[in-house]
Length: 199
Image (cartoon, rainbow, N blue to C red; front, side, top):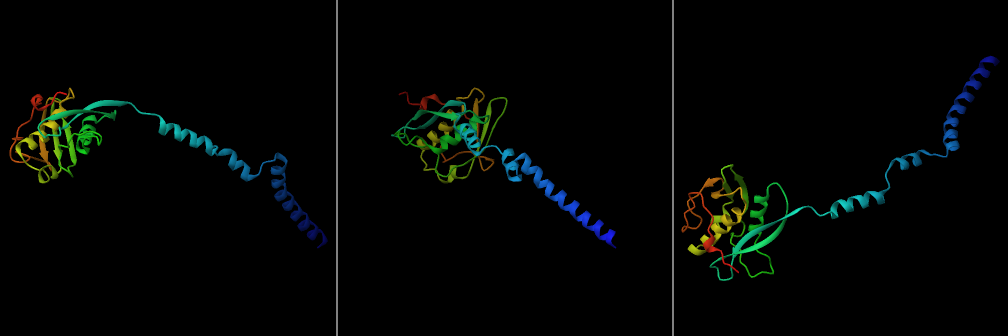
């Protein structure tokens, strides 16, 4: 029995030595588990600097021309605007046209409030199909001249791009004959320079 007790005692000592030995190795090397984790993580201040640099770097831009109404409501006037250079630049340009002229200018918007560009598709032959929400018709103020300015602000803005020769209007995915009853837009529309006021 004495030998058995001695063997059990010896086994317990061995287990205690092994367990304490792991901690001893860490103490000898001077590395705790917490320190090892911290070494693997990148310093947060470096991460912040890198993310700030990525945000601050300016992207490539392109100058586009938007056509808005002059203060009298008789002509279109060109307004240049700088936009980020993206693949769908025609879509981005029409969305800017919908947003309206710069607040500092005296120009007037030509697109009825609430209008949304739903889709734009430019075919290889130069025909641009532009699909607007129902507000283009429902919220239009009417009048032959006002309708002319709406139609040709869109057509002239799009035909500044070499890939666009003509513009076909759609509303809610359907071809329309007119926006406000005065201008026939059932066929594709070409650029109209006569409505542009030379400054």
